[in-house]
Image: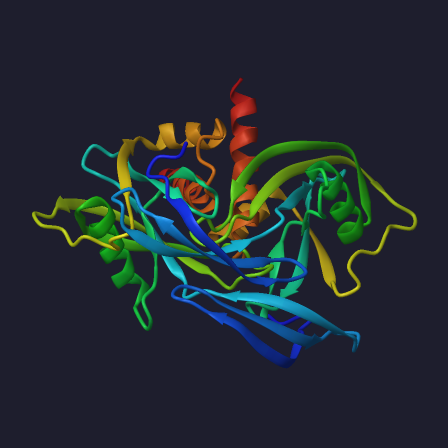
Length: 185
Length: 185
């Protein structure tokens, strides 16, 4: 779907970093006028809902420098160049929680900030979890603390405004929707 | 909450645009090591769920240059400098749909991309809608098409992967949660 497409006249790369790139495009609008678009290019990411044997979701508490605060989130991480999202999901689950998933299923994908960034997150659910003896340690610069909560507690956290992260809040409500639909079948 | 806080050693501004700014920070990690953080600063935004007299949600279809595709979204827009989110919500509703809300209620706020950006979206629900005779036309460079769908149709769109935008999908499921909770009271 490209309704109201904006054709690129000129694209200037402003920054190319370890994670994101920034470009400013001059575009032609549907009415023939021109405008500038500030665009953050992101490699894409995965997020994983890990469900343990007690039917609890494993959440991570993590400091986020852009916000200068820590957040409760589901495990997540960005794709390495050319990596299949499923591989990223398995790696991030291991690195952040120390678990491997006997079953890893793709649920849905979504854009997080379509106004200024192309980040696409692929959401997975991980079940049949096995603890790994010597899990890979992820990014050396990543510090997380694990919490295990039920789906009902997670929904309560969304409602109480204790979950501030959109992908986590959406994942929790999507999981609830999915369970409600499967119980109605 | 600042668990695992990363202290800024040095911050360099890379770009300051019309909408976003980009900075690269050198930070000190909890273990005393250092790392770089690429941070997009965003003014924040609002998103509005407009419910019309037929109990339908007014959605906008809009081209998004970062994705090179159009998306179905709820009306949304960024805060002007120093603007109260409620004022932004009323303005964006008028500009994108031509309606004024007799009732505009804040539902929840959330971070869209905490790994690399500080964008915070404030979600509102707009009811008691009145059509405005000569609505303000918003950004000259914004082209949208309106669609009216029921909440059940919107949930179906989330499930069918026709809604790809995280804020819209989350808003739809959050509205459903809220209605389910109020009907249980």
